[in-house]
Image 1 (cartoon, rainbow, N blue to C red):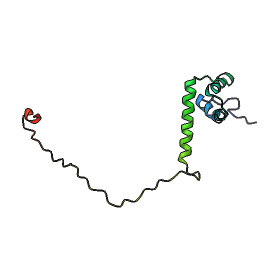
Image 2 (cartoon, one colour):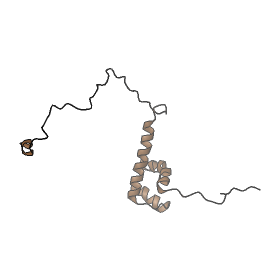
Image 3 (cartoon, rainbow, N blue to C red):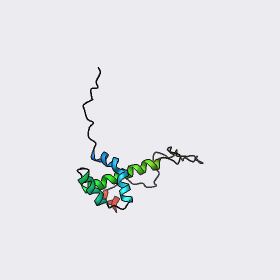
Image 4 (tube, helix red, strand yellow):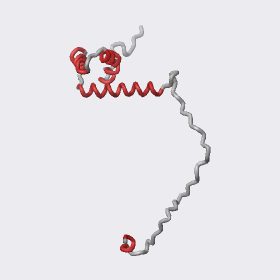
Length: 117
């Protein structure tokens, strides 16, 4: 008879951010239905038992949306990442000398007073 070593072990609890990420579609559906953020936060806190502050809720919701929007904008219209196309260079790059010619010269052995006058 074989038993799994982890049969009686429960998975580690998810972080608050991960729980909000799981609830993001439901949160956005509630917002689209006209529910205010304060009512959604109260529901998360009182009904679901999430112990978080309203500021944490706001920041995490912003970060989750930003991450989602960035990942969707990186994908092209066919679901693949766009490949940047660089235009060919028509003229070669100029050769830059290591010592720039500024046209400014001064005498390091001159007295300091003469230098600043």
